Image (cartoon, rainbow, N blue to C red; front, side, top):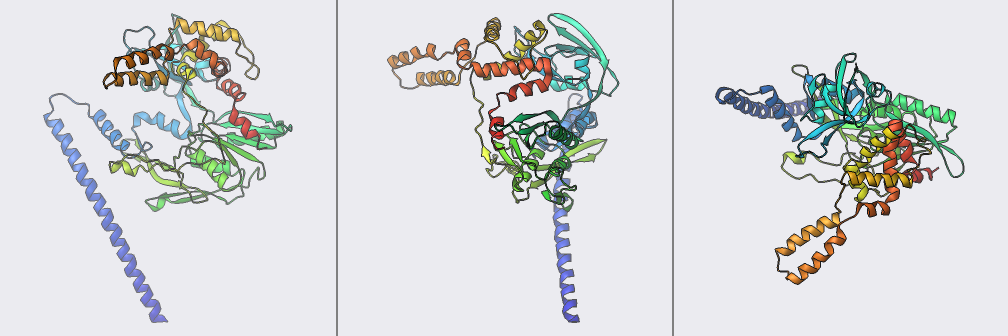
Length: 534
């Protein structure tokens, strides 16, 4: 007995030593490869420094080299030098020092070149510094703190607008041809994770809570629970629709806290598995559920990702919620932020997410990039809803109106000529407004091309180079005028959709993001389908 035990112990020790030696050898091999590559890189930079004809900006070169390297890894592994601390803070906490507005790059109307652009205010957030200090949607930003925005990209101007909370920002704006100045302090901006919440009635008059949840940032789970408590107390809601459409994810701990509201304490929600032991972790709920029996439907789409997929996928696996919508994005890679030299940080992918059923959320194998292979979509990735609905998006005149900012530009003019409008729950885009919108489009010389007309043009070019007789070509050419779209006729054919999107932009001018959501929910077919589950 003693001899057998000693023999087993000796065998185990030999086995452990062999494993350690193998791991050490593998680690040494990896270190050697890295050292060799870095030696080559350092030598290239040294030769540049000694021999290049002009003075080089080495900080910019190295940052570019790092960023290009990380793009070969995956889209989520990102380098943040110290100068981008604000971006990192926004990513992890949902906070940043700034004015609280979305900005947008636009081509200058009637410019000689398409390269002539300007930065405009696309959406000042309600209650934030920009909105409180009379900065309006459509204002052109000419300069920030005396620095001209001419020729600058959105990221450049965004960096100018952000800064230490309490510091004064001076904006030179152009509005209706008049130059104006606005000067006010920056503030600590926190984006609201709960975009909008309300309750809806079912056909048999039951109250169902609806919560549009935007992102998983610090404190977002508490905001979610506060909204849900309000709806169940105030409106006596007996069910919940959680809208995670367009939710790109965020902090995993916030996702766990949300799931904790609906399943027993100690329930496994998600596992992370990586290359090193510290990356392997099992996340379980840590509190007793506040709503263990509340019926739930979760709405998802192709832009629901990461933490949004953890919440929806886990609650689906645990038979606690039914999912409605489209297959989710499939972002099952876990990132951790690591400090690096000179106060920089690296957000690096360390592991993958696995749900209670064992399925992996990740849809794309980025390791194929390093092999020079094209990415292949794994149909097992993402979360497939219980009730799959077709994506209603289509390419027609409404798509052209949206991408060319016609809805936005008209809503700016509408806002400046109408002191007040009905609430989002009641507002109706009248036929007279559509007629006025069409006149506005004429002044903008709006045109658009259908996919059919593009295909026809390509076909005609191909036919000219092939053995097609002139008579046939002439007959084909006769079809061209019939394929050129009239935007007036197209708007008549799609008037309901045009009214919906135009109304949403108008509501956003008066009632901000909450107004837009409240208005669009009136036409939301996926929401109507979700309500049928209660």
